[in-house]
Image (cartoon, rainbow, N blue to C red; front, side):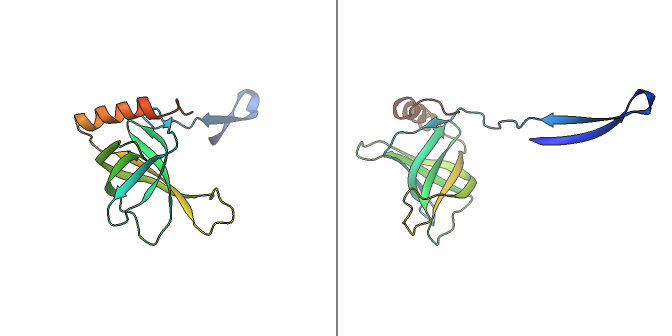
Length: 144
């Protein structure tokens, strides 16, 4: 939260301090849904990042991946697939929104893990329909 202090001179030359509190506004247009285990994303560019999806919405997704030396481009295509079930939603045009370090679940591991947030660009009708079905069938409810 951001506090903005303003001094206001009131009646009888007394000084009052007023604090204006602005709320952080959620910028996401779409609700996020946690994804079940075994659902992965593959970024298809020179970096070829593969990782488990954390959450998904009609507007994008977040997934974690093991860091390597290859840098991720700002724009790329991503595939969503489910291990062992034959589901694959391919070539979703996307762009990177965030990319940050997260703690590794395995404390003695030497691998660095990051989480990337991506925004989907224009999806065609078929991709959007398959994404809606994926959200309906493979998520675990709405995320706060």
